[in-house]
Length: 418
Ligand code: HEM
Image (cartoon, rainbow, N blue to C red; front, side, top):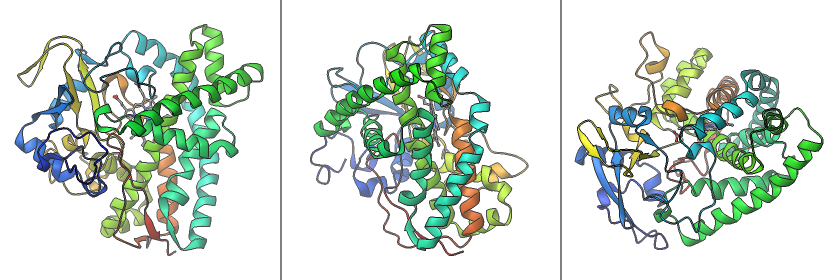
């Protein structure tokens, strides 16, 4: 951990070579050598987090075992190595942080409102938004693609889904930023960031309490109205559950998609041969999406909690132990993927697809919004590649956000020559 550059961060005592969880911008630019160093040093690397320790899993098969195993879940009650105090909690709750049967019940309810019909019905709206954003970006010529394209698209869509008017988008974006950074382990957050997480949660709850009341009195055809209706038909989603769900959808559905678009475009402009290949055959766009989710995933790691004594590849864990499945490392595990450090769209676009990536997770918490994220990203990348095939970086100086769980660019300066 480079404590000189992050003096306000409470640094865990890990060797500098393994600074995989260092939020310093220079480390965020390329954490992959650190991830590899961790796997090569010890695939069960013990990372001190405050007074406790978590085990970092960096091999593909070990991550699959944990994500699919019923012995592993979330710590629904009480604190753990990741969240040592609930006094400063706030942030994401909802079913992402639950185990069966609570998880099963809530996920089932939400799935009823978040149907394939609702998602496919968004296609014309997404296409119109993408076209107008590409028009504006192309007219400008040289742009920050995060600012003018990757961010506005998912932000506007999630706001429209949740019924947030355009005038409140910026406020919404601020809450999302605080909640997204708040996903990282508490020991790696500054006191200011912890406080921002609490403030954002409170303000978000107050805002959505009003919006939910409004939708109950005057339902529209948005997702929020559907969620309120599910609650009333089945009499099961409480007010608190609705609020938690809205916050979950905001963070899970917005920042991740911004970064999937950004990370995919960056990988393509850094590999012009692959950009040319996909330009020649736009049906390869889904393969670009899958390879990005493997090579540079927006969600870098997922925490899990041992619900009972268990073992992973012969290594014993006690009930209550916390592990980190470092997806971003596991997906470059040479025992699972050939030439893993190479961005190669033929991995998922050819006749013999590679092993499934873990970019949307695995097991009972598998991303509920994956079809929506795929739809948005596919429409966005198709339009961009078709209309700007000579897309190129206008600088090599790329800034990353400090987030650790969610990885993404602060800016992506590109030239959009037609
Ligand atoms: C590129 C975009 C996305 C990525 C990379 C992504 C990734 C993930 C991952 C890795 C998980 C599993 C977390 C865990 O196991 O602890 C997850 C869960 C989830 N995602 Fe996504 N996601 C994306 C987009 C979306 C969208 C657009 C939505 C909805 C609007 C969404 C909603 C959810 C929800 C509700 C969960 C919790 C599922 C559960 O706990 O059962 N995600 N996502």
